[in-house]
Length: 322
Image (spheres, rainbow, N blue to C red):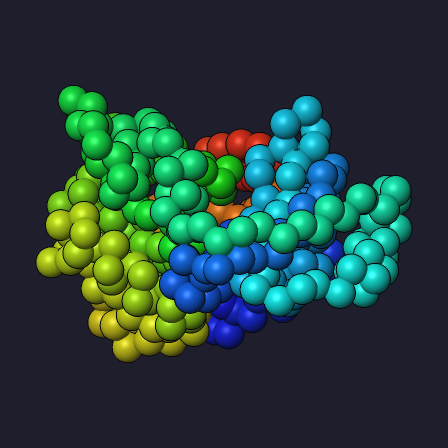
């Protein structure tokens, strides 16, 4: 996850909407992987409000996640080593519910006996196919289907497993672009787990810079690049927006992917314009459907035009051309 015109702070997300990156992160996952026991907080909520409810739980948990909505409902779940303050959480959840015009959700708090949480989490996620990409964990014992590009990623402390609508939208965009042209150098801004940088490197065999403001994401992305045999092509760096020297040296990029958030993308539009090559393409994601028009307008003012858009599960991916 990257950040603002040159400092994309996650707090810039609209009030009541949590960055998908933070919501799916597992803070302290290694420490919690094998635990004598954990407290589980769980609630079922309207899908459009899942991120906001997850934001309430996150400061009180070691891990926070939510499912894709089914029938308009999503499951928000959090795990903590410490017993949660039920009264405080119910009050905070009530405030979020009121902001969305919803009834307060029922908060289920339970003590779970010790288990290998990370191992179980990995096994809970079967392989995901998105276009030419086959995303799987290290526990997967099968073979990557013929004609598919394997992306190996495990549950970890950085966002990007291929399941979220914004990540899938980006992978679909890359799959479509691969049918049209080749790229010589790419940038994955706000790389998280590095899944999109790895996809670019393995699709086109081109050098890719993967940048993130979060040190843990940088570590995870570099590790994933090695696991996928793409370390020679991917340079992983810490960067606030486009500030890192590696981004200036690598520019102009003929393909820039930024799966972040609407407001940070708006603030980084000038940086994108400066770093995108002539006739280059940009894939922008992390946008709720009602945010896409504003981000598109911002980038049109900087000389970019809409090539096409992809919408999945309420998240929009914009493919722009210069």
